Length: 420
Image (cartoon, rainbow, N blue to C red; front, side, top):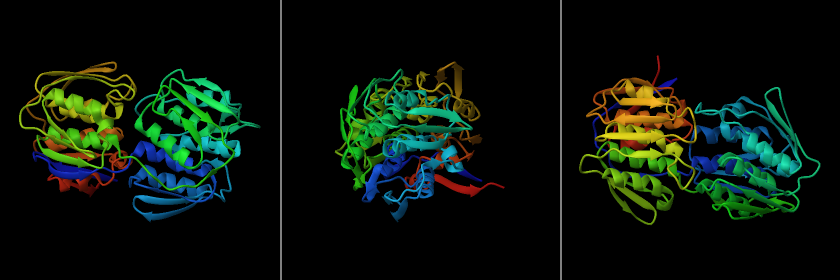
């Protein structure tokens, strides 16, 4: 096991390049198995543990996976020899459920172990199953695995009961080779939903409306491998924007799509930060005390739930009172107990947290309770007085590539050690 050690108090300055979007890559890689011929070369993939996990799952299914470099994979799924994905890797990560939709679409059957992931709340796959069943699939969950099969997949009108990124993407993937037209309503509009749709279209799918309220998929008979580049990661970008503000630094963040960051930008401007946008870059600087604000998480284009936890660290040291309302995941405020160990003044009731800004945080031994909570603790360590040690950093490695290297290049005193 490893820990991150941070000696805080340094203002971050410089330029940092953002990796490809985790939430897009972890759906695009499973979707690559839809290609019955040809190879897909996918670049701008983040070098993170979730991607490494998916590589192993793909190889276990009989796909040929060549690593061209740390951010580029070549996938040939033409000789896939099984539709069973029942391994520890499958159980360890949430996004493994995309293999259900992909194998159902191509082979009309699949057996996939139920997924794991971060403990941020109850995350059922009932909306995924609702969509699969509407297209004619039979779903049985037994012995911890999803068994699914269909004599035929037929297009259907599907209205999701809740806005779900995972269900939107998974059912969209499944519908690519269903007979006729599938119409998805009350869908998620996140940038990575659009990116997955663009990737599927590049392989020959016929998908229209991704990023709007209604997605229409006209089924095709087959799909071919294609070259594709993943969009930049809005969550990693948002994390570095917040770190710049929290340390009262001056960072230029490159390889971003500023439009994807508008909800974060708006809150930082409200707090008093300086924001300068370029075509594919954004600069965040702070030259005065920041004000507390209220944030409420919401599906895109609202404030991202994945940025709520890093943002909470900034609000802990902003002047005055702030409020967080978490509408997406019921257990996504657990990290605030860790921030209290560092001197944060926080009261939590249900999904609402009230934060009173303090003059400083102090270093402590804390835990990354999940992926984005880990990023929150890193930011806390960067602004805290003294030394902070963060354990359970395997969560951080799932979604932030080389996080200590990137922060060190911006002037942070951060390094990784082996736990005794």
